[in-house]
Image 1 (cartoon, rainbow, N blue to C red):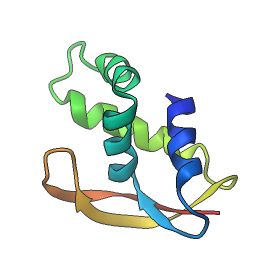
Image 2 (cartoon, rainbow, N blue to C red; image 1 turned 180 degrees about the vertical axis):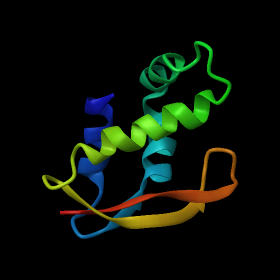
Image 3 (cartoon, helix red, strand yellow; image 1 turned 120 degrees about the horizontal axis):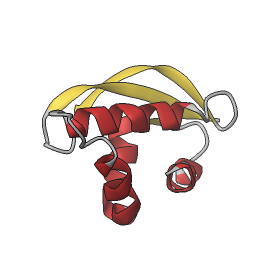
Length: 93
């Protein structure tokens, strides 16, 4: 998952702001097998698989904080269900 996330983050132009919903949507479009494999790890006994998996993806993105990105706060954008919700926001360094 880290390799897929790094690929997406590296393609964001320097200085631009992006959020976790952007990264998740790109994972689903371009790295669907890795995304499904990753998300399936949260299915055992968890009623909110998507929420748990996406929360972990946000933490995985945040591992790059201070190196290639900087966390700048929260965003309000559409999630994979096309419903606006809160998510973390970063700037590409």
